[in-house]
Image 1: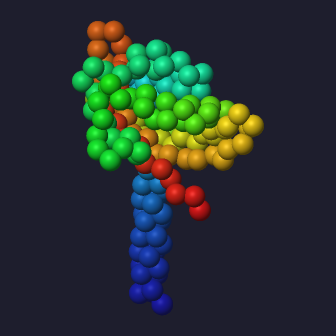
Image 2: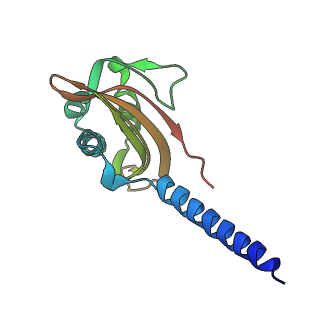
Length: 165
């Protein structure tokens, strides 16, 4: 019986250590929005402005968000596109008589390094026709922002639709 006490004590300590380790790992894995840098906060505001520009069809304001050397891969394109084609997807919707009724942006992750901020998020939006008909759809978005003399601008990005369940 005396030999079992150290064994039980060892098992209890090992379990406590494992529980503490799992707790620390879990806490470290939770996205810390409160710990965002000032640059990340500024860029997230611009991500929201991006979608407000789309919703109000303010293509002039929308274009100010894009760096002259932008290259990205929108989900509807078969190859990467440059700045001169950034509004093509909006025009494709408006040419069909659609307009964005609403959107919801859900951040997934971001990271700032010097003058660059990378964002990843989901955007759910509803484009409607003139009769108000339309279904919401969700896409995954990645943008790389660079700080220039005039402010933050998108220099790279990709999008991908999220399949409906």
